[in-house]
Each structure stands twice: as C-alpha cells, then as structure tokens.
Amino acid sequence: MLILISDAFAPDLPKILSSYGKVTDDMGKLPEATVVLVRSKTKVTKEYIDSAPNLKLVIRGGVGLDNIDLNYAAENGITVHNTAAASSIAVTELAFTLMITLPNHVIKADSTMHAGQWAKKELKRTELYNKILGIIGLGMIGSELAKRATAFGMNVIAYDPFVESSVVATMKPDLKGVLNNSDYVSLHLPLTDETTGLINAEMLKEFKDGAYLINTGRGKTIIEEDVVEALKSGKLAGFGNDVWYSDPPENTPLIDAPNMLMLPHLGASTKENLLRIGDIIESIIRDFVSTD
Image (cartoon, rainbow, N blue to C red; front, top):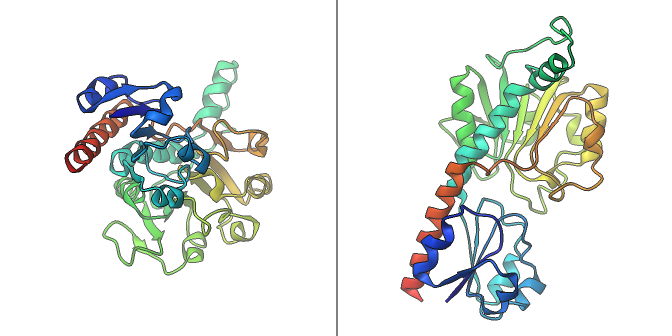
C-alpha cells in the first residue's frame, strides 16, 4: 500500500505510518496511491481523483472538506475522513487571540512604539468583560470558544441550525437574533451553498454598530467588499481574519481595509495540533488496514 502525503504534516508522520505501507511525498506517485493525506492546499477534484485509480482513502488533516469533491469520491468508492477533533483547541485559541488583540490595539501600540511614538491617549481600549459574544456555528470549535469567553465574563449567545440547546451558550432561533445583540461575532462555519457569502451587505446591517467580526472558519462565508465597506463606515469596529478565498489571497480588498487584523491561515498550525492530527491519521489508517 502506498500512502501519499500531499501537504505539510508533522515531520515524524512518515516514520509513524511506515509500518502500514510505503510512504512518499512524491506527487508523481499519485496514480499508485491507496491513501492520500491532504490539508487545505491540495484540491481533491474530479481530475485529481481520475488521476488516482488506486485511491481508496483520503484523510483531510483539519476540519473543512470543501477542498474535496465528496460526491465524486463517493461515486468512486473512496472514503473521506477529516481530523476535526484535533484542531478545536488550536483554532479556538487563535479566535480568542483576535478577540483580545483588536479592542486592545495591540498591533497599533507595538508598531507606534517601534516608530518612536507614544500613542497612549490615541489608543482607547475596551474590555471583553460583560460583552456579548455571538457564535455562528456551535460545533466543537464554537463550543470551546464559548467556554473561554465565559471564563472572561462574557455573555455567550449562538446560532446553529443543527443545535437546539447548549450548556455553554444561549441558543437563538435565527441568525439575526445573534447579530442584533452581539458586541463580537465569531464565525465557525463550514463552506456550503447556504453559508457561501452569508455575511454580506444586507446581513451586515443586522450587526450592532461598532461590533467586531472574527472569522477563523471559511473565507468565502463573507463578501470581502461588503466587509470593507462596513469597516470604512464604522459599522464594524474591527475585523480579525485568518481564512481567505485562496491561500495566499489574491487581490483581496481587505489588504487596505481599516481596523483589519490579517493572519495567514494559522488556525491549525500549532505543534500540538499537528501531533494530534498525526495520532488521528494513524488511527484511521490502522482501522482501514484492519478492515481492508
């Protein structure tokens, strides 16, 4: 059995998986591969699958599966797994980092100090304490974020059409019920037909004036141009973004937007998370081999 590692994983993963078959990162070996490991960079399209006649198992190191043609994979008898449980802590901590950094003007404070300026009077902070956090998508990551927000004394509300009740957040029956009331809105959505472009000009009107938006879910759940206009008008006080239309982004209008904090898709990029991903991948392959 050939295991193809198509994207970046923990450096010791090839050695760990070598007991299950030959391991390679040579993309020229795709036609021979039985198992392919991908993250967000590799797109497992129809053409990709057609180039891999021996492929039986695709494992996505991470949460989202929008880079994999799930229907065509199923038609070709290919099983697809992700490692959703591994990334929850890493992405949660990054989302919370953005929530802390924006209202405390950490980047501006640091850059002005390096420039020899003393901007104490210009940089006015606000606290997270007693603010309302609205979480859109209360899965594993959203739930972990809710726990941390509660520890900071925030009030947490959430909307998720697949979650009726929660011990970590007060559920709202619709999206507007969250947006109308939240000082911070954090997006934790998969990319589907329903969520693509969800945060657009009309939906931004439902936000509280001066709210902060955080996105560590999927880039295309927002309309970038509409978010830029909301930042320019002050409708949004700030936007922290880790996810993009493409990695890296091409010609994004967010580059020049005010009160914008941009990260290069770092959500799952912790040492600990890569180790957890490796453990889950080994478990999936072990089960695959035992039932093959």
